Length: 276
Length: 307
Image 1 (tube, rainbow over the protein chains, first blue to last red):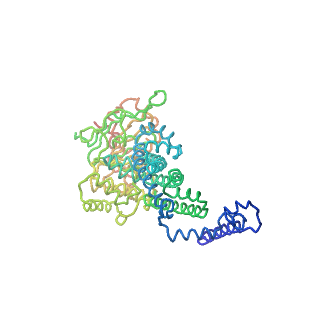
Image 2 (tube, chains in turn orange, blue; image 1 turned 90 degrees about the horizontal axis):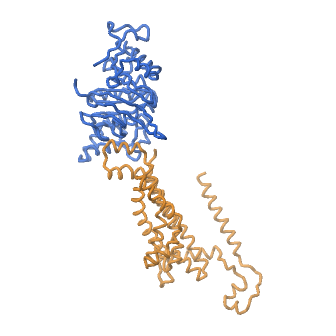
Image 3 (cartoon, chains in turn red, green; image 1 turned 135 degrees about the horizontal axis):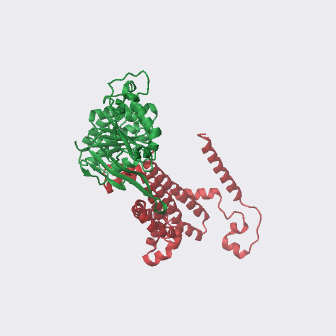
């Protein structure tokens, strides 16, 4: 079992690349197009000698050039993919941490008080299903800054999973542990930090893990709208440049960074999880 | 008469059901516990045993009545009344040492780390868990977990220990070992204990007094049995003592028949819930249930009603 799963993964990957390669092989068939148009787009595209979709080798070459120089900066529309990813990560972290600062204390309150839970529940139920991007125009109008608005959109989309999981985790702390705290005359702060927080930590961390995933999903659309910098903007810019190789490289980079973020949160979740 | 350490006066628990009809679990409960005494409460499930313990612990309010500790009415949970929970209630994210230290630092917030550790170690040694300090509850057996629960309760040096069926979740072998250890520890520390149980043998082994509770709803204290076995009793030759089967038969007879039909028995007169009868079935020659056990003492009055 140990080696068979990775071997199968490699096999599937090779199969995928093989099919891709075969599908993008140059076609010999002559195509007659308007001579004027042929001049405009270049001979290769007009005659159809080369597929307009890049072959795996083209993408691999592009990835290599990006890897060699990920942080170059040649003006506002030509920055290395590393710089763009760094911008995106900074926005995600800013919005995400702000959301954690708001969601965890409020979630604590909701979880501890059935009254607060019932009072806030209708608002949460209405606000939660709103696409974070729907807030963008409102944010642009009120905050008057596209950078801040982008962070706000991340904030609002990271908020709900953390809020709901924190409330749920705190409300589900076992009565017996609270009774132990009561019979030991433990004060409210000590109870919150020494009993409720560790007991609810695995659930809170699960919420944080869901949130970082959603934030990383939303950042691409967010930056396509806001523009300027970031991996989302990079994808949109390369679409305007019709550089499919760059788009594919960016897609792969987005996936890898998302995976690393998720792994980090999974590691942290394991740290606070206790076996029963 | 000396003032008991804890005095319960007329406590009751009622729940308002649908339509406003009140359901009374138990009512008119009166009893007291003297310092250094080990009192067991025995009764069928559903008679509100755990609720009584929770009221004594201050975790639940009584619908009526008062609980006095050292002459003062209790207003909630207190570090003076430590609870050993049925489900051990250890915090799984803390080690054995951490669980006990949490209780100790709650009791004495000003203590230095070294002092807390030494104090915890003393109680870990007392319950024979030396070497398991750094283990987490998930790595311990059921019996070891309950030992940690006992150490945690004793470590805060409470004036009163409340135990809610602490051994009911354990296998018979472990239960027996822990019962003996509790007996030893209580003899060493002269700890005042109130324990809920539904195990007759456990009550006879541990309890100096055994409170018999009738079935709910409207459960009451039927009588308080004085355990006339010597205080240095142990599991091995307990059953050889002539009093043992008399007390045991009395308790079983109560649990099987009288606990159900007590309302008729008490209606016959002579019963006063404020002063439940104090009985000593161990001294009752006529009750010797097993043949061949010689009478240890000359005949004495069958039932001694105190006060």
